[in-house]
Length: 115
Length: 113
Picture 1 (cartoon, each protein chain N blue to C red):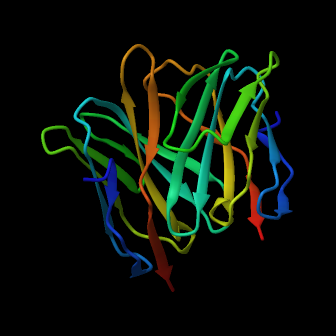
Picture 2: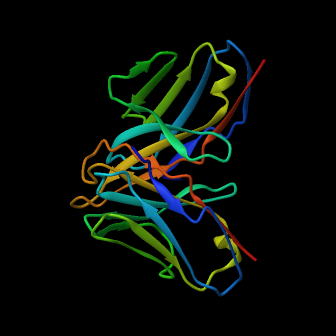
Picture 3: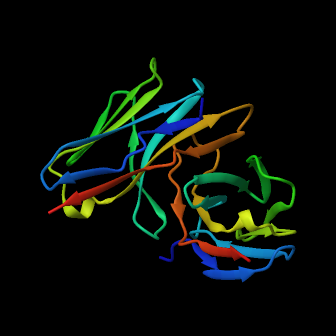
């Protein structure tokens, strides 16, 4: 069974550009989470989608946005890129987003470099 | 106080050693707790959930102290393959189903031959 897949694996952009990252959850998982892992900062929660709706959002500016499609795949969009957006962006999925003991399964991430 | 705070590390231990990691969380409404492991340049993977009564999985033991808002992970008889970053994760539920999983910065463990 395929795990969580993310694309692209690496991306280089310049300041001010826009980027779209993609994530396909494990088959049957309805919840998708996005995290940013910048060097030295640990994983920072970005967004949580479940059943096509945004359920929660981390402390990031509005230029970070996303959506979840009917097939539960998800996109993360970042507008007006800044140098500090350079990071590994990790997507994770879980079986039932509302449960309290959810286990996350992560993709390998997209490494974004902003020059 | 940070939402989830871990020992800064790094920890360097010889094979066979016992090592313990600590983690504190700030939100008393937190409902579930986990330890994840992240190898260098890899994605995090669930190591174990942490239950109120404490739980053990082979060489790994996790403990939770709700009164002190404290979680621990004990690794006995360390192996070279245990070298990784260990992430403390806390699930906090707010209004409705508005919850999020918050990760600590992680503690780097290196087990030396």
